[in-house]
Length: 241
Image (cartoon, rainbow, N blue to C red; front, side, top):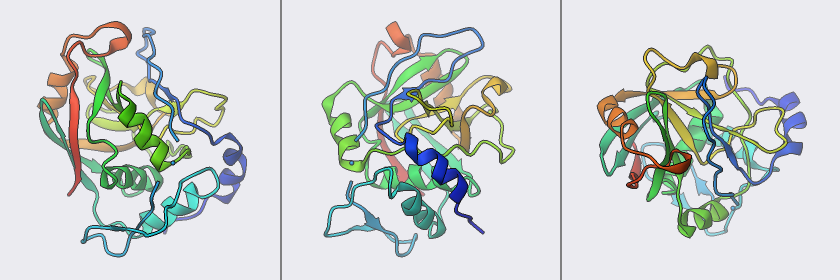
């Protein structure tokens, strides 16, 4: 049964604002790339997870006041837990953890809003991670502005570790003692067997179950300053399966 974390909400909502992603680091410090600010959305009504959701007539903006309740209700009605991420280098499938409800609901919601379409894997650290969900164009910033300004509570105590293939969410870097998660970005661990120094600081919410060779290929592309690939690696679409 999904429980509302009232005590947690009371303490963390004071820290909700525009998300700037704090990138996970290797044990050897890496240069950190700062994310594009986020901002607002049209809410979808989740009636049956087997059908495509329809947008409401009235615009609804996610913010520090409504995000937790929204994703609480959204998560209860979700039946699907896999997504297919198609990139310019191929596709892979991720299974999302049912018992990390806010992060799962957030990722599916953003996928259905087509937020990830045309974003990039903007940070690639060889033999460590690939990080996606950002871009260097204004379109991504506008999409964030259309969805809302919010962060997610951490959920790192379900026993999931940062094994190879784990998808996790970076935390906001600004005035964030509670390690609230930056909702628009994600990273995937490629380290073998894993990057366990990240456990407890970031929230694992799924794992690659098919196409890890594509993730590895992305991890090997040449990069420039800030670990940004020299040739852009685009996320073409994210589909809920």
